[in-house]
Length: 178
Image (tube, rainbow, N blue to C red; front, side, top):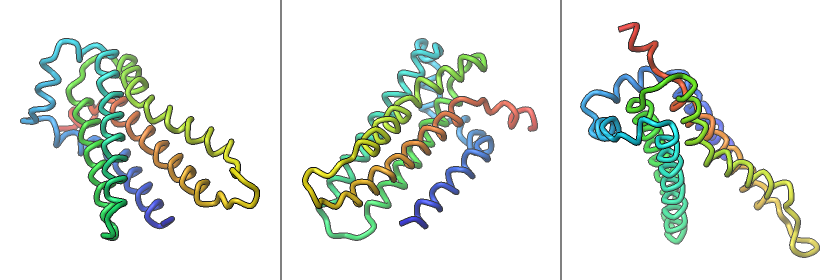
């Protein structure tokens, strides 16, 4: 379990450091990016940030629902496929928002803060639940609950940082080089 968590964290760091080549592959011919560029309310950092917030909410909720449904099947490792698909979809949506939105650096950081605040809120919630975790009766083992909350804190913190960096920092350097 810790090897998977460590590997996933390394992959996310690589994606953050090499986001410019990833973003440069996305823009041309992407219908989602063109749809967002044509939408007038999207060019406001509030509108784009709220859209990003709701996209994160829907994607996280859909992933939790899919994992809940998959837990009823006895097929091993299927949940990992859903988690990888959720990560890839998240990165695609974040990169699309990055490509479609144009504005100042300060407004881009505001957009990223608004959009990634969903994961920040989840991190705060899971941290609070972890800190206040108590057994419901004497002798109850809460190790698995604590482990689940700890992993949830790591996952949501990673998603928060990755969403903020992908949407908050413009890929202009990669375009200037070419």
